[in-house]
Image 1 (tube, rainbow, N blue to C red):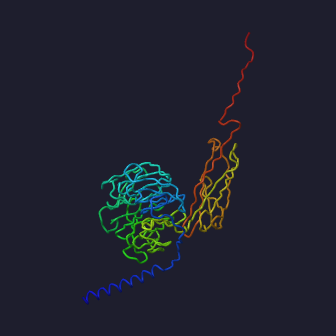
Image 2 (image 1 turned 135 degrees about the vertical axis):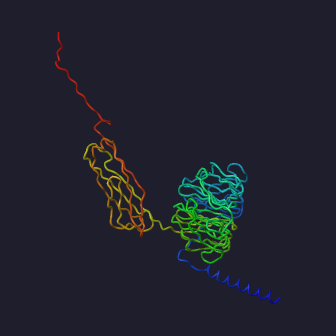
Image 3 (image 1 turned 180 degrees about the vertical axis):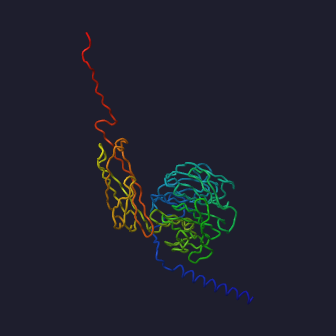
Length: 448
């Protein structure tokens, strides 16, 4: 009995010590804060209410889609939680669901739903109109067993966390099977134990919430293993049953660290950045958060599942971006030697300073120096270059060229979009090449 009491005392003391350090860890203020903005939802079946909201996704306009799992539906909201529409209902027919858990949006606004207990993926437009579906129960390629997560990359390839088959499957946007990796429970690199969520970054890298291995694994778009991070625990960078994962426009990775009731942020290589949240129902606290999503402005949305709500937190993206608008004057030419002046309006459309020199690469004129100075966010600079029309340009009937701008940030080159300009030949009053013939006869008097 004394032995048991002593061990109980030791265990109690250890728990108190761990709790103390856990609370101390939770109270640390990090340099990068995610501030609570708003929340919406509560338990119920009406519009804007939830029953176990699980997956969350955000489109390019900032609209938020929620897999309202136990209500068997998808709900759509604006960026601040104003209800827009919903679709679904319990069943196995087209557009119906049986425990939908995952949701993702492609570049055209189409919505993909992991219809978990129906063992399929369903595709809809942004208003919920049914488009297509694929899958079915099984372990062969293209079939599923309890698919919980779905993600779309920048090329609109679709990745499915085929949870009970312990694998990731990749499809095109219409459901044509491409490849798979994983399979069979394991803890080795590239193996899974309950992959519940998947995310893809702008470079095509794929991140998997390997839930019961308490880690995140990173792969290339073909499933080749890159790295992993996480282990069981509550310290910074450790995970306890992570059920959700998302990636922002800069490649930062957000993890719904479910049983730790918090969100953790990592860089693309798994280095710990920050965290927020703990157990509770007050603003900014969580009760079994399962879903996480990031909008284009790096605001973070959390499916706070057992609190029956979505929470929004303000983040910030460091965005390097140049935009070019190209024009030509005059817009028409009619003779060899005509001069065309091209104007290049280059704008820093991001929120970081772009270091000069700012140059334009023109497909006809080559490198055009715009400015040796820097561009601060929102600042524009205009440069010009001249082109002289040739006989070949007259013969061709038009001249089209393309241009893009470059600058630097640190050791990285920042490249703008490519813009085109076309000028058109005008050859006299005609719109096509013309030959004129004059005819005469000699002598002009015929024989009598």
